[in-house]
Length: 343
Image 1: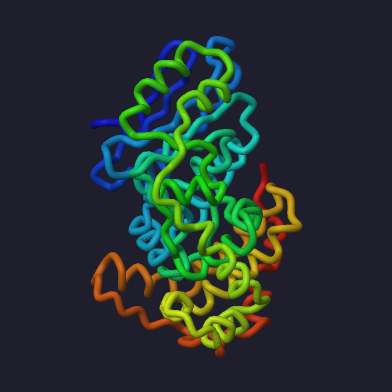
Image 2: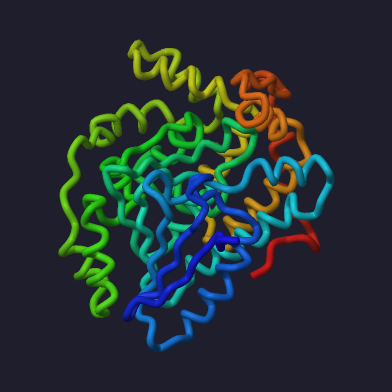
């Protein structure tokens, strides 16, 4: 069998390739378990100066976690239903605290679990093929993998906008948002990797390859995003969008209303609580929330509607944003006691 992850030493670089191109390199539990010990070894290897992570194929860096497997584990009550997240978050923690330059080449779709594999590293390179999103509320999940930490720290209300609408950022806008630290053409990545393999100042190497992106639109939307997504509740944000006369606001409101009301409330709570929390605590917050979310029905309904039956018509419970109570959301975020995430 072909390995789901490949590891290679190229000069001074340790190169990690997510190798499920037929699944847009979606992350499996096996991949998480393969990656952790190699990163731990490379961290101690004096011959390795930097780490590069990329996705096989031309379409995806990593499109997220293996949602179908999580659905099936959850339906059967298997421990992997929450165990996957626990191990994934521990890997995210390792990447965040990695002692050497960690460079993610986001040359393709980068969503969900793929964001966790990249955005916590020291450098992220976007290309014209990059498509970044945190679409979890559309399948009844939550924007996890450290999203509680990094999304509220993007400029203004970009984080709240991304998680409530599932908006997708192309490469130039991913750079403008601060998701990526550099931008370059896809065809330049081979030259970049060759230079990284020689060793030396990683930031200087990346800066030398960086190009100003074309077609950036996010800065023009920033004012509207900040003005309309500053509310402390989903209902407050929807009211602001409804009161705005623009076509853009109407489109955003429609997107918000299509998501799981429970997931949307959870996601906004993450954005508001995460800004004042350290990274490790943000991952613990997510472990609490995902443990409870996996016990609710919206995730399974979201997967049914988008992946299994693909009718695009999920029936959420509760069905409206008005029906979600603060008590329900508080319970989702309650501590796990002895089951709290450990590092």
